[in-house]
Length: 171
Image (cartoon, rainbow, N blue to C red; front, side, top):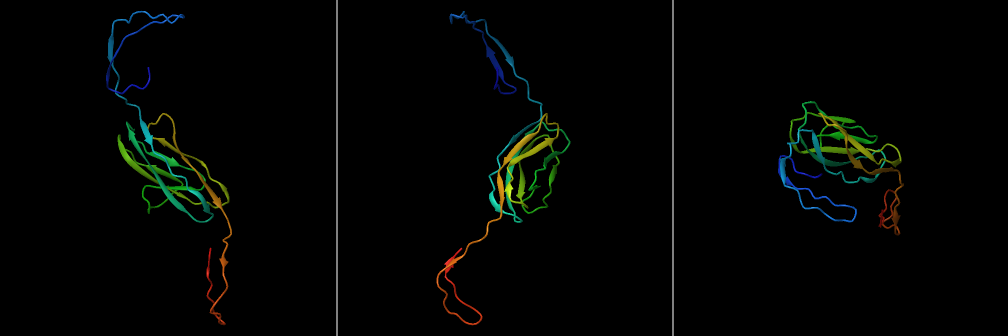
């Protein structure tokens, strides 16, 4: 049986079915209480895709998580090529982030800065580990570093002088 809620009483009875799909009568019922979950657990939100970003520039996004039953050791976020992490949007960003924990954490925000230095895909998984977690949790990220030349189109120039001109157009 899967999907039971922790610390909840359930009542069960059993029915047998043979190969001809003939069922027996239900057994006497039995009840039991599920245990309280004591394993460290995270519920991790998503990180919006960064899309295409010019190399040597940056953009920020964030994801959040809820945690329960964490041990007193820190959670570790990262590292992933092209990404930096912070606990605040305007804080110091680092390649890995160490987050002090409490047993229960609610809506903990992690800021992510994408800073491509080369052209190409920066898709990957950001790892979250530590604090007694049995296995790493991950947050998917999608981005690309690009280096596209800017195109400027203009109509005829007006107000021409030796030091200036007025151009109408778009880029």
